[in-house]
Image 1 (cartoon, rainbow, N blue to C red):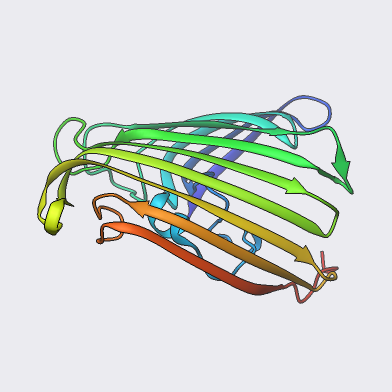
Image 2: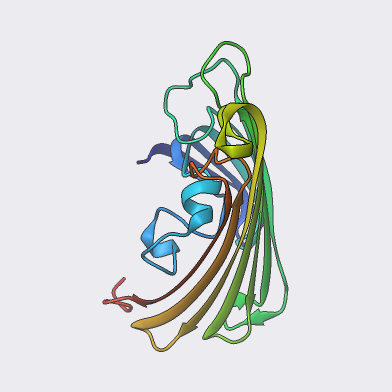
Amino acid sequence: VQGYGEMWFKTGPDGRGFDLIFGKFLTPIGAESTAAANTYLYSHGYLYNYAEPLTHTGVKLSYFFDPANFVYLGAVRGWDVFNDNNDGASFMGGFQLSSKDLVGANPRSQLAFNAIAGPEQTGEGWPGNRLLVNTVWTYRYTEKLTQVLSGDYGFQDDVPGALGERNVPAVRDSAWYGLAYYLNYVMNDYVSTTGRAEVFTDNHGVRTGYRGTFFEATAGLGITPFPHDR
């Protein structure tokens, strides 16, 4: 899934500096991650499965003003590929801003923005240019109660097989978008509980294979069997 090198260049106190990653790495986009420890629920939602990439191959440079505030830029081969299927690169960027107000050791409010744009279809040049914009807002009511809101908007031009009226496939420009809400409550060091609700629209079935709007709700437990083991 991953294979990358990472270098850290310290430029000041309090975690300030540059972080350089090169190789194949997990996407910073979205509220959910392939890494289980970074995700509330074992199951994954619509946005993770259909709206967003999972990995990138290329280079990403981040600058940390402190551990909770940073900006990044990257040049990658695209979505979920190691060998690119076209001649064009994809470019990505984003930031995270955190409030100075703390809840325990964490910022009360954090806002993350991510974007990626580039070609994703097989062929010469830059075929099938795709844009995805993602925003994630995290708010901690208390040290135990946290909410997360994640939104996506994606667009791609000249998608082959995009479904139109009466589900007739053709080459079309297409868009998809969705919103996910998470509410997590930490019961103790070992157990937390999470509820997730999502709505996702796939205008021409290019992400799911079906035109329409989809809804889901999930509840589950997160278990940390050895919370005090370093």
